[in-house]
Length: 298
Image (cartoon, rainbow, N blue to C red; front, side):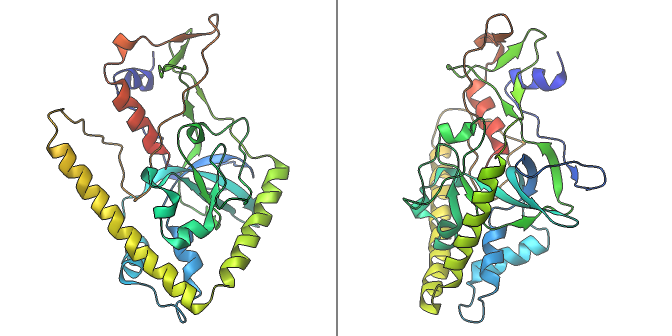
């Protein structure tokens, strides 16, 4: 059995191997879902930038943008949809679950650009959702959103196609006859849905452009309020963990970017002649394994 499988069975998950994207070497197609090291806040900050003169950014916005420019933020690999190609680049949008925060608890900029993915209920009600073929695993467990503001792939750190670790209905990792954990990476958005999504991106952008200075000021204030809620939630979690008698397991793959880390979707029960279930005795840290595997997501 290869080392990545052994690691998974022991309760840890290997992070994807990242390299600088190079269009001369790496092949991606529009509609594919790939792994890219990026911040889910980058598209939001990009959208705000054109309106600083009429709605000055808040202190935390300026600070985050500067740290992002200085490469002073711990980013993490996340699923990103390849939306279109340009003459010498690709445009992508990141997926996020926002640490399971309610969409209504996020800042209004993020709420404006959030598009529900897969089984996630439409946001806002009546807006189109983004369907993924054959399905988007995480959206069966928790809300997942695409940030409908394109950013360039350029030479970002890139991990190839997004891979999902398949599980049975009880949450056990599935292994094939060779003992290798079953993964799939054939997730995509078809041509028709990509065209519809690009139209939705344009429509959302036009709505954003029509915001009044007063509305933009309210949007900016909501960024500060959301940041305060996030910090309070982190503090509450820290106190809860400190008061718990249960030992905690350090996750070396955790990279903080203020975004969610959805667990991997449980797969369907395997055909007995092709797949087998990894027995619980081989997975003493199954819950921790799911949490660490989810670090690739938000």
